[in-house]
Length: 178
Image 1 (cartoon, rainbow, N blue to C red):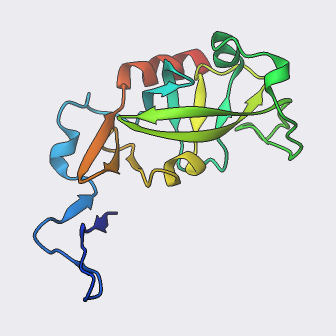
Image 2: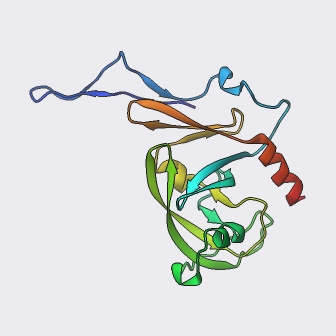
């Protein structure tokens, strides 16, 4: 899947038109797989800057309708119950069980020079991951992720930037979960 984005020519007398010479494509090629450990079917696990700290073991999940924060990150960021707002919608775990919710918190997530405010649902269950970033976060900066290529790509100004996954961390998390 690729999304094409075109820089726009500005003119006061004419409608806006796309310049065809500076095409930015937000997609993946076979060469994006260079450097991956083969064979693999690893989750996409990255490091993101959350709340001003570099946070490791963040799983990117296109199937998640929420951004989730686990207890290790909650305590590691020195957050307190007073920092949380109520969150009352039910949440079901991977195993199909209801999850105990502590609440919701909004924190800045930085990728490159872009910073977006993200709502995290704070849960009280064990996970080898520190957080799960789902579609709400991916869609905010217009990011596209690929587990096959172990990357996230997003537009920043007039360039396509990427975040590379950490397969070793993904495998460690898998072992810890089992």
